[in-house]
Amino acid sequence: MIRVLAAIIAAIFLGFSAPAAKAQDAFWVQIESNPTLTAAEASARRYSSAVDSVVGFRLSSGWYAIAAGPYTQADAQAELRRLSSLGLLPRDAYVEGTDRYGPQFWPVGDDALARFVPGQAPETPVLSTGPVVEVTDNAAVVEGAAAPTPVVPEPEPEETRREALQSERLLDRPAREELQIALQWFGFYRSGIDGAFGPGTRNSMAAWQTSKGFEPSGVLTTKQRGLLLTEYQDQLNSVGLAVVTNEEAGIEMQLPTARVALSRTEAPFVHYDNTDGSGTTVLMISQEGNRATLHGLYDVMQTLEIVPLDGERSKRNNDFTITGQNDQMHSYTYARLEGGTVKGFTMTWQPSEAELMNKIALIMRESLRSTGDTALPETAGQDNEQRIDLLAGLEIRQPVRSRSGFYIDARGTVLTTTEAIDQCARVTLSGVYDAEVIGRDDAAGFAVLRSRTALAPISYAQFMAEAPRLRSDIAVAGFSFEGALGAPTLSFGRLEDLRGLAGEEELARLSVDVRDGDTGGPVLDASGAVIGMLGPRLDSSSQRLPDGVNFAIKGSALSDGLRGAGVGTQTASAGAPLDPVDLTRIAADMTALVGCWN
Image (cartoon, rainbow, N blue to C red; front, side):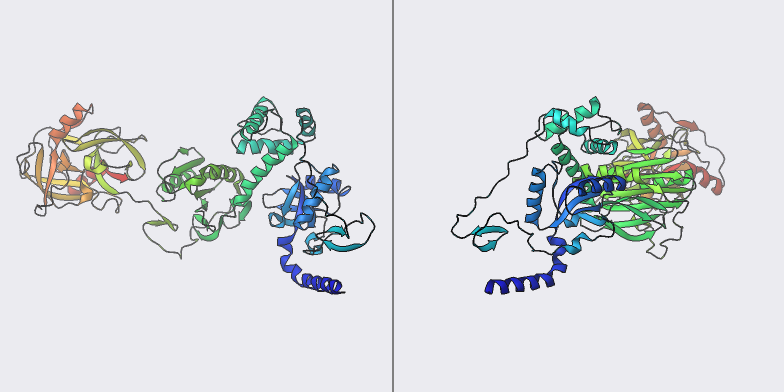
């Protein structure tokens, strides 16, 4: 009587607690998964003829799972063994929890989880007659009988190569292609996805088998196919890869939804910020424009902190790709021109996840689709913070320092000071063109740069052929405010001496007010001829020169040093003084902004 009352109380308790615990307590016998709904429904009908309680679920990856259940975890394991022993399941079937499954699609209108009561034992068949005194853990214990010995099932024998080939022949083309995709994902297969198992696919299968300690037969058994696909699916599931549509941006693509969530819109970007502490972020890129817009975006993206300096860059007529890597961050950017819109994305992640996230980035690129001619309006997000060092809410990378230089030939060769380029990981011209140092003279204090991209300057230096006239008017062209104004300024002064304070023949002393950003700029006479290059201030920790006292490396010293480096210069005789407007224009056309980046 007491046992009956206890059973009734337990049933009542379970009845009240079941709804909250159902999802976490329900387990399923995972039978197989299919890439399409049509194939999954056919599979569900096929298994339903032999297996009870067959259910179909959508997966977050876009595939469809066929399972049986729901059961408690112990009952699911027992049912897996029973059905496998009868030959009713594939050899790679396994037990799975509810949290992986999405909406139920089979049977239509059914809710399998609603009929599951956690903790309720399944009906146990009567195995023998006799006085049963207790039922524990679903096993009948007979009075006076010894406790039964647990039966440990024998491990499933591995298929022979012949059996593996036979089971492989039952695979349809999508299933064969999926195996190639998984092998490609793990780096074993490098050819096209065609579902044809030729020598390339066989060799990749053998290489995968070797990596897992299996005999490299070149034919995957049913169990091995299940292991390969499970590992592949687990990696996709770890980031929650799923199709996301943003109507405002007019973009549909796969995103790592377990890592990021929609945060805000600031044209031309839609921000998806990190949600799990992994450091992953995604930007959708969407704006109206043409090829010039696309190429301008290519330059702009490389000024952002989320695009590290090191990495491969590729720009074509209608698309571009930018990768970036440093010790703190990796990123991948892709954008393309579609009609009158530019669509793309940037994803960032931690360096420790480079192998996985590089693969995810390629899947995202392949999935990128424009949902129409819609693009983000230019006014989207205008109410957000506006700063000169922000672009649509993103930090713009700033150089360590910016100095001046000037073009000395039609090829775009630039002369600047060694101070401008010392200890720089990257040197740029005009903020966007990568430059390489093709020569330097530390004794004279100058360096010679050349852009990696061909440049054709509007004007370049004509060095004065004779010595300049003492006490004559001069002008220094330079980026006084290190590029903040976008154009060089002209500072007027006077040539005070043809030597340095200690009698240095290669220096000339100037009386002119300049700033650090002007260093490396050309010093011109009133006719526009270059008489030298502005050097850095000569102040020391124990001595400070009066304001306005500066020095230039004389043109004659520069020409001699450049000839020694195999770089020629143009010369000109002093001419008539120019109008200040004309002098400013000539100086601006030959002056270049030199950026030092780390």
